[in-house]
Length: 307
Image: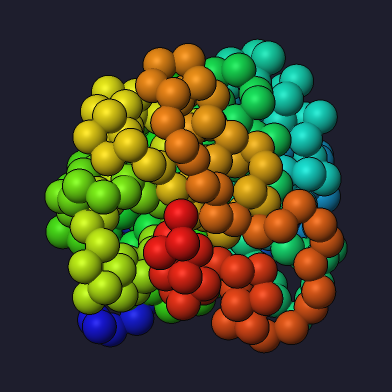
């Protein structure tokens, strides 16, 4: 496995690099800038870095206002606080108004492990993809973080990106991310597995175990779970006749929900959603929470093998 990279630092570096050539990019912080990877941005562009303190709802509204001037605000903070806490403002100030503002939830999923359910973010894909016109990004590794940041800043309109805190290996060759396009990562004939975000680390490990057990996996990465690659997914489902979704999110409403909606409309296929059970989860170490929820590599292997 390659060296592990802090996704927050990689995210901050990617935004800072693009901002060097685009002075419309500004960064907003709710006492969250340094921990979101923006230390270098604040030093390089102090006049484009704004610290407001802990007021995520207000900062979301400010992002909307700045976007009306032609600036491109990027606001990153703790995932449940920029989604669940600020949902009305995201829905009305950004979504309804169609503002070109970028919301980033860091420490998503279980990554604030021992702080418990108040800090876990397991419903963000679901609630954010319900906002018309908003694009959800869920990068899986350092290269995809860079590519998602580029796509996010190039896209005109509201976006949400979830990044974690656990160190990430380089999983796949770096490629540009296109909204609504998946990545066909592995050819297989027995089962289609679709994954998104940093749960891809567990998924890839499980796929290797499945290959050793002579189960052939057609693996698809979907970096925009709000905007699926219908052609790629339906073609794979038609070949294999069985689809599994894997995500560090409730198994209700997120990637699994989006894929189920697609398959019901266009390619009815057996579907196994592998995600977090729809219940509040305990506090504890990150790896233990993955195992307890049944989304670690070993659990994925067992469930797909029995599907």
